[in-house]
Length: 400
Image 1: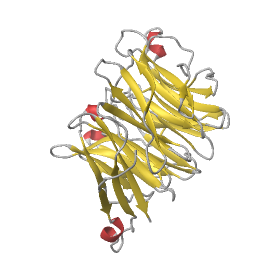
Image 2: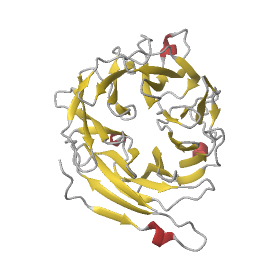
Image 3: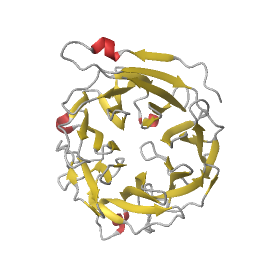
Image 4: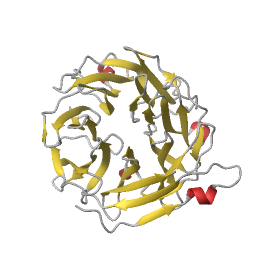
């Protein structure tokens, strides 16, 4: 499938905003591209190796079956989509959604969520592996737990050619003596589908916010939303130091006290010693998207930069470009609808003028836009809901 007939948006940030006393921001070009996802496609996933970008999505069939489809992009054209898995008992949710992860040059990992009992939130993480995206292994779980409780919101990072790290929300304690704490589980997976014993990095966290994880020069770094006994639900961080992990600590003390899960997790990106994190908070009743940088592999972070306020809905993602600049995507509500916005920021609290990438439905059914850096460009995918559910994807070129 060749790319043709796209429309082209050019945002000349450098010429419009290079005023005296302000940074000279790079030029940003946005192209909307055709892609292989048909109608009734939702919840995109983006991942890439050196040669190919992979787009995965959930296809909703008329019969009620869930189909996970995917296709590869080589920079010029898309492959024909394929189906990795089909299920009748999948847990389909706007915030906890399947994903693809590239593992080296030849292996893909697919995670889906599948019901373990009729209870509303009893489901398991199911993993399938594929060589070159052709055939898929039998499904397995990244943990040995068999309790019929919630296991979801995973994040995956390949460590080397043989091992991959996973974190997830683990609800097994919901069945143990009335302890209702959600925990952050961690485990290792090898290419044969063998999993390590589960280690718990935090034993009391928020119930249904996304996790994220990245590899710094010093080791793995995980971010997630914590939950204190006083119902403060700020973003926390744990770092791998050698074979051990640091104690959980707040990335920043927003002091957002809320007696419910906001369903709005953080995002992290890393390259070398540089880490970038973006998150949403409504501490003090004021909605905000914040971003912070670390230049020592996550040991310390800059004072948060205010990315957006007032009408911010969150649903953030973040990536670093070739110059280690952080770029954030998020959703901002407008008078009648919402916009996917995009900008960069610095450690001293400065941000570029935000770009409106595209209109998006502010309701839950539009899910969480996905941002990825590949071959010196940013790629962003989301679920468009009008006139029908269908995945959209843009290529964002950053010059300067």
